[in-house]
Amino acid sequence: MLNVSDLHVAYGPVLAVRGISLTVPKGQIVALLGANGAGKSSTLRTISGLQRPTHGTIEFEGRRIDNIPAERIVQMGISQVPEGRQIFTDLTVMENLRLGAYTRRDGAGIKRDLDRTFTYFPVLGERRGQTAALLSGGEQQMLAIGRALMAKPSLLLLDEPSLGLAPMLVREIFRIVKAINEEEGLTILLVEQNANLALEIANEAYVLETGQVVLEGSAEELRGNEAVRRSYLGY
Amino acid sequence: MEAIGLAVAGYLDVVVLSTPPPPWEDPSLFAQQVLSGIASGSLFAILALAVVLIYRSTDVLNFGQGEMAMFTTFIAWSFMTQMPLWPAFFLTLLVAAAMGAALERLVLRPVEEAPVLNAVIVTLGLYTIFTGLALRVWGPLPKGFGPFTLDFLFFEIDLAGPVCAGEVCIGKLSVATFVAAVIIMALLFVLFQRTMLGLAMRATAQNRTASRLVGIPVGRMLSVGWGLSAAVGAVAGVFVAQNVGLSTGSLAAILIFAFAAAVLGGLDSPVGAIVGGLTIGVVRNLAGTYVPSEVGSVDLVVAFLLIVLVLMVRPTGIFGRRALRRV
Image (tube, rainbow over all chains, first blue to last red; front, side, top):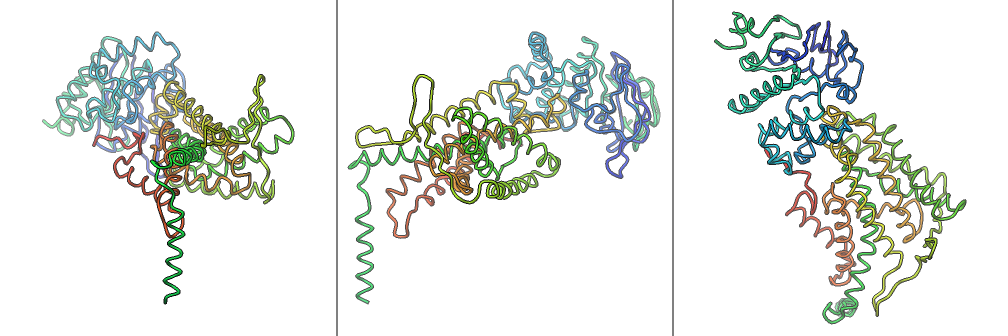
């Protein structure tokens, strides 16, 4: 579904991504693991169009998308849940979700996806009229995911959903993400520092270091890999 | 020594004599002052709406707002020499909107990625540019501008002259200004609260990255915000010029009050702009009438003191909800 090949991303003179290639098959959860500054977020930002690659190609469902601006990539079916959530804090929960469906014109479909979002995240339904700034960190993360789902994506990019959240909440969110993947066949590319958790729900994973892929394989293989265990899983 | 004492006594005498009777003794004077305050406050309110519009949709305070409004009012003046009032008015709104959108695209867009202060400095540049341009095109002499007679097909309203109830009078022009302010406020309220376009504009002002990620064409939203604001500014200019005449400095003094009104009401609230504008107009007028002073008028002091007090209690303004953050 998504093919990234020899991707290079630079911020001025700083090379953040140096020749990453990866494939995300339809219906799967693929995890990008690695430490801070390994190039995970840059890769996601480039796929969603916020950042231009300096070299390499990105193909989505057979079409090159590396030159398409972010606002059009959403329409093509890729939604990103950005790092740090980036919800509209001054707007209500409902307004945030409504904006998630900005590119859509199918009123009935939007209504259906709104109900679906409230099914996955009941707390959002309870707080729909509240200003998003008043939500807790976990609820804000749920809102960010809900907003991305409202665009009815075929590929969801999730950037560090565990960031700054209590372990119990992180588990809850990962459980829901897995459920969405299984029940709706939504393809997910997940960036995560918490390799343990990510490997629990992912089918495949790539380990990045300083902008390059150093390891790739099925989640199961990586869980058993000695180096991964030492560096990222901590046992 | 005695002479000085006498002179001071005489001066104080004058002041004491000029202090008006309190409201309960002369209610019609009080009512008159309130109405006059509403009249000037309506002018502040319309321009404040333009300020709020740009702030709300692009997060920038436009210091060139007054001069843009002045410039478009000159354009209206030129149109009116060529065609009847209504076509000239609506054509002016169109030109103003196009001008606002073009300014955003050409002048503001290049500093979009920079800190917001850069954009604010650019708007200061707009201030001088439009003053200079207007001087160049229309010259330094004030132009006669209204009050106009509005032709509503089946009836006409002459904006010149007052309407009176007993001893209390208000200019018909002021009534029209007030009505225009309320209509614009209502339209903006509907735009921001009830339409997808308005919601997208608010989202854009708040978080551009997130806006792009949900598919909002951010650049277009900013242009629309500036265009709408310039059009509202043009309406403000047309009313201000009918009140105080049309010259390059017509709007500058009003803009200070418009900013104050917008801040008092809460920078992101159209309703706040109106309430803020009227409050400042009325308080200023009442203070000028009732607060005795030996050093000249204290109307501004009292009005701005009130603003400071309100902001101490409600830092976001009366209706603002911008700084609401959970830490």
